[in-house]
Amino acid sequence: MARATSGSLAALTTARDETHATPTLLLASDELQLSYDLGAGALLGIAALAVGALLALIIGVKMHPLLALVIVSIGTAFATGVEAADVLDVLLDGFSSTLGEVALLIGFGAMLARLVETSGAAEALSEGLVQRLGEKRAPLALGVASLIFGFPIFFDAAFMVMLPIIFTVARRVGGGVLLYALPAGAALTTMHVLLPPHPGAVAATILLGADVGLVILVGLVVAIPTWWVAGYLYGTWIGRRIVLPVPDVLMGGPRTDAADGSDTSGTAERAAPPRVRTLLLLLLLPLVLIFLNTAVTTAARTGAVAEDATWVHLLQLVGSTPIALLLTVLVASWALATKRGTSRVVVEDLLDNALKPIAPVLLITGAGGMFGGVLIASGIGDALSDTLQDTGLPLILAVFVISAIIRVALGTATVAITTAAGLLSSSVVAADLNPVQAAAMVIVLAGGSSVLSHVNDASFWLIGKLLGMSVTQTFQTWTVVKTLVGTVAASLATVIYVVAS
Image (spheres, rainbow, N blue to C red):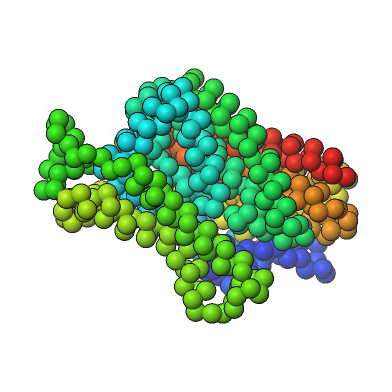
């Protein structure tokens, strides 16, 4: 039997009742509680059947992913013992907690992308990249830029900001959108998975008792060759074999460079595009604000500044990712549109049109989070821990395997790395690792949390829908990229671990 009350799944943590064989999942806020009477084998079997049913509906029956995700989520909730009165709460918790993290990022990112696209700024930047590096090196240039841009900014936000530049380069050079999008996307996800200040890496660093500075250092040493293999070599290889046109998802209407808002997309006369320097400064603005947030937060935690000071809270707010993107959109509206003679009415219309094409992306992403939320609330994490804790694997291998299996079952890398770190923290601490080994262990754990992205992962749907891929094509591209990122990073970190022993 299961019981649930409304609450966010974002803070879901695992607890055990020492007097019972079956585990209990508790929300940190104690708002949502689920218990179950099913054994670990039954729960894992249900999870496998749910994923199989989802793939069959989407790929075989050709059902719309939104409908399939909701239907399978409901079926999984009932199968794991959630009472009928509580099913809706569990579904909405997963849906809302996912969109609560990504909706504003995608929305503001789409607005910024539309401004960059219509002003001609992306076209100017892509032209500059092509002229300086040559057309053959355009994927490399976009990947390196994404490595830098993805260091402090969450994957969703950074990808939305880079997307108009990727699309413009693809139109300018040709060869299909995946040739340019996959190296850039791989760079962003590599940084997001492996390095602080991203939440999964931070959580693992704390739980495993590693040093943040060393984790960043080891992570950077690992991240660059990992991206080279997973993003550049594989991304360009598969991008040349699956040639897709550049989607119109960010177009949202005609280009309007004229002050009166008239359509100038098909005319010879067009306002001169903004300087490349202007676009670079706009792209750096959220980067700087988020770095500021990180610096102030670190200073407060170390006692260098007063943690409860009002100015500290204000700077943290300004540097939070949604607010940083909001401010960037406001500045871009002036610098790329109003300042250049575009009327406020036209700017409003541009921003409104930017949001319309992303509605399906948001709904499907939220539904993917719904499915993952049901898997989490049903006790899959505890079932996996019960099964894998006593495997007898070497510690470095057990860390990767447990993180990877939790990732495949639950869908979210942040939950997977946090859950695995919590399960293994006592074993890692007891192993008395030196600082470099502890940092390498964090990277191995993070690598496991990246592998085999599939239908219960929000990024699977985000990437697939924004790039115009089918589910099968998303498996051939993004799933393989994410798996390569995880396995190559973990392998390199294991080498560092062994050398440091």
